[in-house]
Image 1: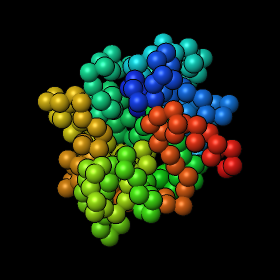
Image 2: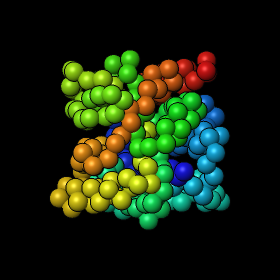
Image 3: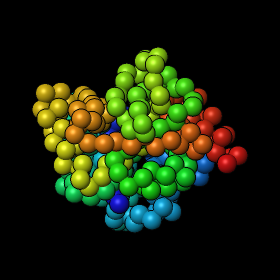
Image 4: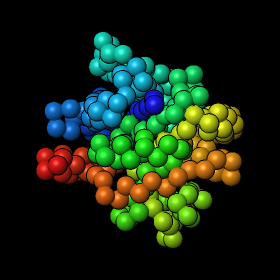
Length: 233
């Protein structure tokens, strides 16, 4: 199992905190968002060499932070003109042919969420099937399988994404091919657009993680709220 953390974006909505610091390196409680992700991944059996981070905005901060670590840094030099699908496609040499997780660099989650996602043994999305979230991508589910990825403003849906995704080794070529094809025409697409394109060729399990802690932080107020929540976990 490998993991690709997508952390190239500027985190505009988190300003002023991200004016001189990448969003993923903002501190939670004694560790950054991405350090927390890495700690949990290691607790779930991954080694540092199994983890890559796609960087862009404030790339030097990441290099300083991880210069003595066995973590692969992949730079998206076009970070200001692209979105996370383009960043994802840059990890092809690192992840293709393997089972791997894709994790957004601002995702905050419990160890249990990762354990459930790894255990499923196929491609899939860990979904919150109970908590409405206006900011998250919505998903349609039938018989335990994802059937359609919906817009954020969709009212009829079965679950919301948790900013973590699992790709199986047998689906890895399909997802990277889709990412390449989409990015040739539009470099500003999200990772989910590639998944949506291959849903008719690959089975994506809907992994119910409604009982697990997860958050996506989009602004300074939400970051402070999560800091307080984590103190009680």
